[in-house]
Image (cartoon, rainbow, N blue to C red; front, top):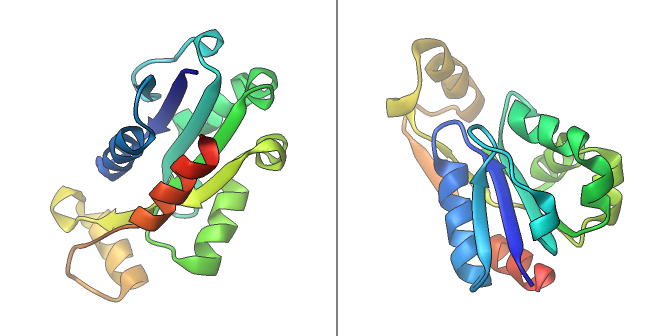
Length: 156
């Protein structure tokens, strides 16, 4: 069975998580950056969709892809993930508001894979906002490897 991991990333952390997830899943996994191309869903038995969350919103290419392919996606074995700085209950809330209800209700797996706050990649306004949110001026990175492993296991 072939698996697609479709994602959109702003600064690259979501791409890193998608690549790690692909290695964890093993053979017959293809990656697709929704910011630059769109996949042919007919080629895949399983689809995992993810994106980074900023200011409580998932990347627009993810939202657009989900809405434009809603019917086809509900007929696949589906996994969903987000990447962001929110943890535990806040991350669960963000996950539940990032995808259409129709997809959330049929998804075999839903996870938050961690987040990164890299001040070197941000503009002045983004740095200012993130310093207020995180309470820190230090870059931070947390990849939730247990969640990646759980997502892969639930999709097999």
